[in-house]
Image (cartoon, rainbow, N blue to C red; front, side, top):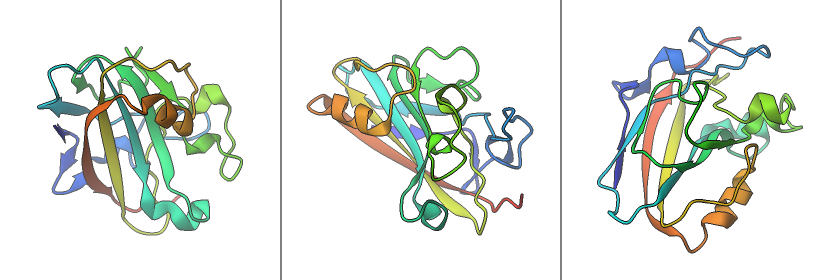
Length: 170
């Protein structure tokens, strides 16, 4: 299985998917989500789940990855740009903007894509997609640990895509 994205050029996500873009929520968080395609998934895949995160955010989060997007029960192999905001055909969990260690946004404001804004240098971002043999019993606004627990015993395959986003000065 592999993941590709038309939103990556020369190893970097395009500006519109983060702080250098033009689409933000009322809290100033970038919301224009990255596009991606899943290729060569197992033929018996029932649904997909994904997490998009930043391991380079440890200075900001005091040692933890920054979760930008979690999604589950995706039934297609193509996720269009801005799918997070355009009536998605999947459910979304909260991102790190919801954490009390950050901006502590409401579940409603953070159960979607919360884009990239690396404050101190270019960061590397990871999209990990899981092919599953079931749909997950999750509700919108779920936490990553809930998704991880629900996936146990149901992962057929997984793939990782990595690219950078350039430093964002607030």
